[in-house]
Length: 175
Length: 416
Image 1 (cartoon, rainbow over the protein chains, first blue to last red):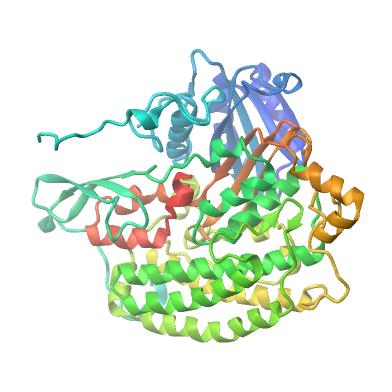
Image 2 (cartoon, each protein chain N blue to C red):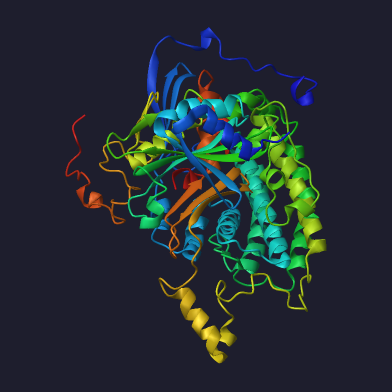
């Protein structure tokens, strides 16, 4: 029994209406493009009714410096990308939810998958997307006091001088 | 009975007597012998019982994904080595497979077989070291030394093929930078002939070892549902009874033409992960033997079968052609000059391969220029390690060490 992805696309469109912006196929990989408000119900539907029981990855794309003709695919600046996999059906699906620069937030999918916990923390750390309802949203790779979100396209490769601003100890700090 | 153990010791959760009623915050790592790499655990202990476990990661964060946006596709191969320093070849191959899917390239059969052989050798190198370090953490020091002997032999093969022991940077988009040496099949066969005896020796030392069993059986148990919810992949998932292996689920290279089994265990504990790793090494031997038999051209490759795509707009032409042929000189310049080389179509792909630790995915967004717009590495260690608090909370500190060893966390790909 396999998931029929083309008919799944039509049923998603029928079920979620305008919240589904469309879908695309490239190299036989399906992408569903959705509004951010629908991410939780749509992913719950995909998990419970369509059999996509594994969230293999959560990541994000910043469309700031994309060429003009590709900007049309990004109604908002950020796209949070969910890579789904179905263990019983051996099928893959990608869901992209678009998040504007302000307010840069989207519902967390941690109620659906434990994997979203660390994945969303990394997206928050690297892109500054706030996941509402996340149990422990804080930086994961960068240090706690870090300012800025390094994978944003307007963040320079060399950093903003963080290396020069390390706190220097001239004597052993008092306990 | 789990693990067919005739004399099972029931490992139960720590009793109330082992708790003293007040908690103490302790840091394990980032500099600690039981922490594999620069990992730090913030734990709260009650007596010797872990009440709260919080992994702190990121000490080895080097910005691979940011760097990728400023490097062209072939330059990123060098960075992919550094992500997993236990099995760099699998990372090279995983990235090359992802790029070929994006570019729409088909590698010639000889190149595919050579890649499969090297990927499986690298899998053996990774698994055997991970088993050895697991032994080390649980007090079986000699096993660690034996496994390093085997890896040393593998590194000799890697050096002969790629020119480097660790930082292999072996693949290119569309193939391999050079063919394997003529004595490659003999080298691999000579290694494989002695490997089963070494594996037997390790199993003899560990499988029925009372201390090893006591510290592994029933420790770090994950159920099938938990493992799937956490996005766990690789030997850890197969130890939970899910026969998910990307080599079978989504065959890449020439895996669909090779006969092998996917070892699984139902128990989901540390011991099951060890058994799965050992069984996978034996399957890897089976795959390599078949691939060597089917290798088009054999070791000598008298017919000069290609290992890479023949299009010199993709692969650099050989040096003698560059010196003696104008078109090849132009191709050479075009490929190496920024803004002129390989241009993928606009689009995005998510491609995954079975690395020793699990699903190694590359999500590449291309804007049609020579530099990728976004490269996301989906590291298996990241999602496998996220289960660690679940495995360790409520257990003794020594159980946490055992569980940590079985996850085989690679800080390089964990933090990227």
